[in-house]
Image 1 (cartoon, protein in one colour):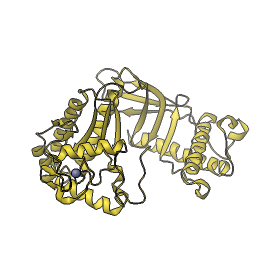
Image 2 (image 1 turned 180 degrees about the vertical axis):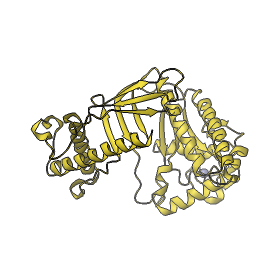
Image 3 (image 1 turned 180 degrees about the horizontal axis):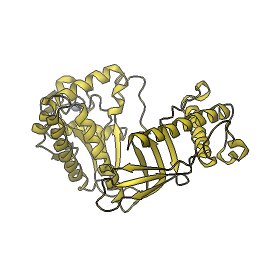
Image 4 (image 1 turned 90 degrees about the horizontal axis):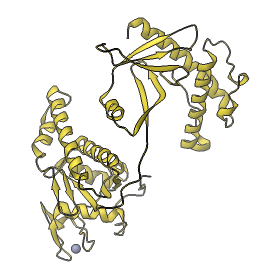
Length: 353
Ligand SMILES: [Zn+2]
């Protein structure tokens, strides 16, 4: 964008923010419905925004109030709009593909905002855009979130029900094999060098970015390899639960230092989630605490059960590959096959909905 266009957009958003805040004052005292946004209720003193954009602002204010109330109930504090983003629909904005060979991929045409202002915002599509634009199940909606630096587009997607046939896999993630399945299969056994390259490169350097791209690509391939076995269920560890209970957090982050690293692990599980979603595979996550120390056969949990790659239970003698035993624990944990070890998850433990 040119500097003058940017300044014009900033002035629209500033006024938009002011108007949203006016509506927040008005809507804070009781619950309002979007059906109540009549001409009289949309009057705002001293604004130059059109009735259309005032309506958009009022709808956003209603959503903000609802979100604050849902989050914090009666103790919620009145939200404030900072005038840095604007959620608009086809009444205000429309997307026009660029002509062949243009510098940009598309233009967002923004009109009917007030003072006769018309803005054409140049856009370049993100890689993520192409993923949905090329998916026959996805339809782009006419809703846009405009900020000074970006425009967010939205897609709607039909979801088919998850498949009912096929095996169930617990998945243990690690550095010597990216994925070890509960049936004993090991996938991505060539990852170690690329993971270590990412860890070794200076943080944020060009070299690290390159290494990360290569690693992401490889992780996507392994995720596809996994779902091509057509499971009906995949259960992996839930990293979101790491912050619950400091004991758990310490234990797992220590494990991760020995293995994938936080960034790699998060990316890998996101890839796996996406691959499952695209292939109608149900994807679930469970807290990973102690999954590598617990005996899958008898439940006995002890650090000494595991020696490197070998798991040998000190109570019942069950032996297995350590990662396979861990993967079986994750699957069993999802089905509730184990009693919760005392204090293992802390008191804040909650299953993600
Ligand atoms: Zn045992």
